[in-house]
Length: 131
Image 1 (cartoon, one colour):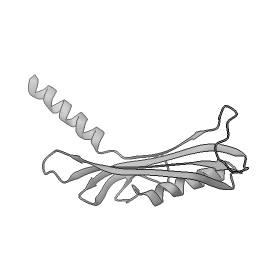
Image 2 (spheres, helix red, strand yellow):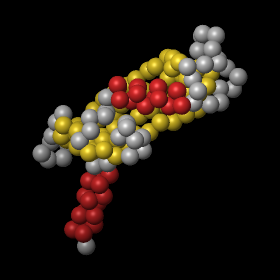
Image 3 (tube, helix red, strand yellow):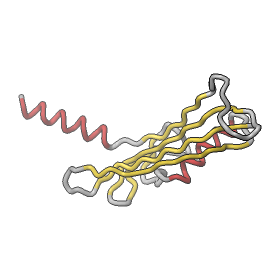
């Protein structure tokens, strides 16, 4: 019984590790506050992120930035340029003429499972869509 439970836990943990994701979230309510110092009209605050599983520096399963919400195999999309592309594309789709105050973060976490060559990488970018 314990072997089956341990096996199921290992399979569940492995399955959760080997998925990738990309997403774009939008906030449109600012409580009558300005989001930029320029004389512009705020449209939305846009946040994009993607993450995936890498073997050393080789992408295995990542979030697709070409089709947000889908996974991709072998696509190196966990980088700032790819996420800036989805944030500015969403900003343009919302009717904005500029995306200001872009901020980004990226990093990787080593997965301590033998053979010790797997990493979980993540990148996030956000900015203000304005007219």
